[in-house]
Image 1: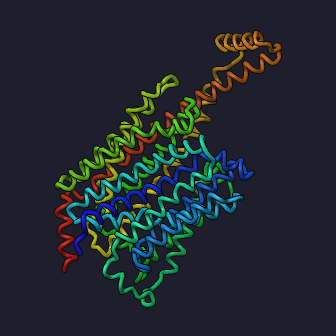
Image 2: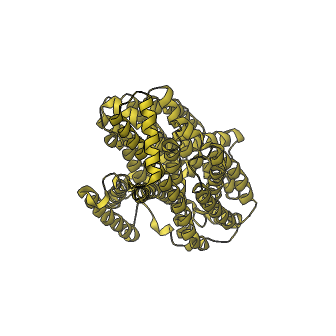
Image 3: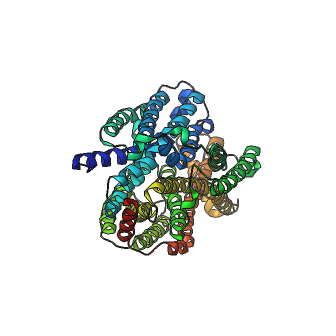
Length: 524
């Protein structure tokens, strides 16, 4: 059936906004943990489970979306997921205890997982193969805007309202998305004849994936605060992760009816694409994790100011995505844009590492623009490249794997940056403290000056000495944190340099020619 321009526009609005809404919720809570923990009578460490529960549910459900869409029908599954996401958003907002909030956040993540992979599949189906570069560009808008907009929106809400509004704002968007999906998204022909009784459910594969991915996400989220393998729970969940993931891969490769068809990764191109999606997720989420913390801890930004500082990168990414999508549609090889993306991500890491304690807000604009261009140059071609060579029946599996690996890359990025920065902080603080020996004349001059200033304001000599020592220690701590964050940006640049060889696993064929071939095969 020929799709009208109005229907196509509504599908674009629905799927892109749903993807943005899902990705916003991965980061919007980060800036509200203080308020949530205080309101619910919990520690910040315990309150962080609000973030962890959503992430674990997300990573578990995303690779299952291909199977669930086939089993229930894609439109039914998408509508149900929107409803779950919307209803649990409301329930999160009215939670009166931390365990209650964590439960609803986990279920919200289950509903949100489909808003990423299934949105992408619906959007791609709305465009002919030769126009999927543009579709990839529009979907990429959500992938870039969501994580960047989350801290900004969360900061504005926390500073002006109460934390439940973070979840309540999803409700009107969810209702509109449900109505538009019901009206404009058509069922695929095979959805009218679904016979679930004739479909084999791969229970063992589902259980193995849930244990493996869920345990891995727990280890990544809780490793640094729990001192990694010094903690018994981290050791236990690490074993679960290894056994679960290896068991899942072996089972899915040899089981006759796997719920995730790993056999779609039979070409070097698709393997390379998914590795690069992991790398892209590492850079995207890792950089967005470091920057707001840096600006708040070192430069004194408010949560909303830190969020707004990410906007130049998001705007640059938006412009690039549309341009790249159009260019890919005209047959330009995607590998060129992937190389450009790596170059700009390396530039982002390098230029960010040059910041000083005196850097102005305007100074950070160019590093953020580099990040936006780098992200767009990777997301658009890799999103489209992920389905090249796949028949329509295998496309949902390819899309689900792509999104799972991007999210896992993000989890690894955040965990790696968190650990690396913590360890570099310890190194830098020790180095700085070695210069603070009692005989150091510059130190004594600084301490004397601070103490005299405190005495002039009414402090006694004992308190003045304590104030001086405390302020010097705070200055050392601040400088150590600054150097550790700059090291984090350098590490990211090196990470992308080391991943450069993977680019050459990609196909150098024009995507439009390949897509047309798939369309012709599927038509027969």
